[in-house]
Image (cartoon, rainbow, N blue to C red):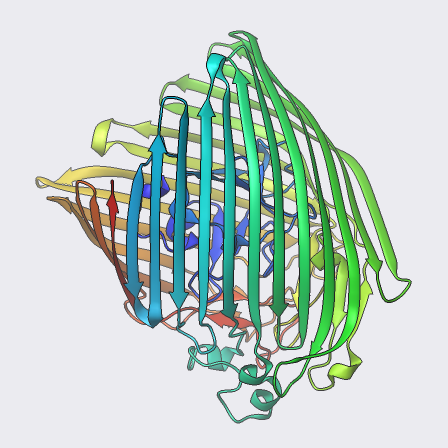
Length: 634
């Protein structure tokens, strides 16, 4: 539950301990981190794909599958549901990784809260929320803001957000809730560094030195940055009872984005609309069925401009496109209790997706349409109230986004050679087998809760995105040799007493073994994901205090390219921290220390097919930092 955390400024604060969820910081603040589940879409950035991102049960993704993670507001979330792989429930989900649902606090759940936080590198964050509740109606509004100077040069930014919802409870189980969300964020981009500089002086950027590479790639002059403004309206209605329940959701969102990397700017605006209907029924205790339909569409206009190497200003426009995405989904499912504790689960989805690209300045056009079915068959066994096991076999499909279909090429030394082209990519397909279990031991404050999942996905035509020597994306291709994603996701948390003292703990371990099965890189690891990653903390409890050490640990060096070249790696690291919180009624005071040993490490990678040590591929993580904050609930 997010509100159980004292610190909630970033997505890492709420997702860092979730097994199977990869959160790779870009610059360590509210800028968009790389999010991935089971390696799905990990190379996509800054507009991500590979996970169905939901707000209050309705899609946040544009209709082409892309989303911007930095518009999510964890401080306003009552619950974040992570449903990995085939466990996803939304009718429009097709992704290998599954879905993540941020569910907003309502006036019935929290009447109001004030948060203040400040920390190293100019971090400032605040939130004010107020709610009201009556016999039939309730409402809540939350406003928040963030400011950040940055650990690295040229990473300052700011974000403001407003989120509100209004709910109504009628007769016979009818409920309706309307949602409004607005986010305005802007931040500068520091870019990647070559290996020697990433581990030498990680706060610097290209342009701080006097080498030929610095003079060519000077980011102070080129001024890469990202500005995003998104407005969203949504409405959900629910009615019926356990025997027959209906749900109807509608949403609209508008985005205005200016994304400038060191060589080109992408300016685009989008309008997305969608509708989602679901009905579930339970005619008896041994049978439950569900049917659903969903439709979504996005219309996007996108212009590309070359960038002046001297002042970062826009030069000639070299690409102008009308982009249209349409998706239609139908699904049906059935749960049958075969015997006490044993349930057979089956689902089938039919999908039709369209991706149309038309140039406004040339005759170039690309019309892509796909229709496919995605089945799932599984079994659930609950031998006891505190133990659940499951196994399933499923298919998944991911169509390319417009960032994949439209490719730009700009020379860093000669921007007059800029060009844009269209790439007729295919759908990424995967077959996944998964087994898992979750349960608890004991009861009360000293109970131990655990979860374990093991999966293996055989992927065909995986969408692989790569970068050039400057860490700039150069395009996406379908890997023709097939790939394999397999791994283990394990988590545990609980409490215990030792010598009369109370402690609580939590830990997660994610093992990710992703390889190319055949083709050019046969047998190699897919770069971009840590093979092992551990998050853990142990807290001592006394008189309202929770104090103890934290750990983020990547125990192995990881390749930066798909060729797994020697001599250039993201080095292993262990980050030690401290968490201290004091709770007294409605008050929470917290102090967090991160990377207290001031370890030099790379938090993420710009992945390429083949790398050399001089290529700019590593994003240094933040140095030693301290943050403190307080919140008051009323």
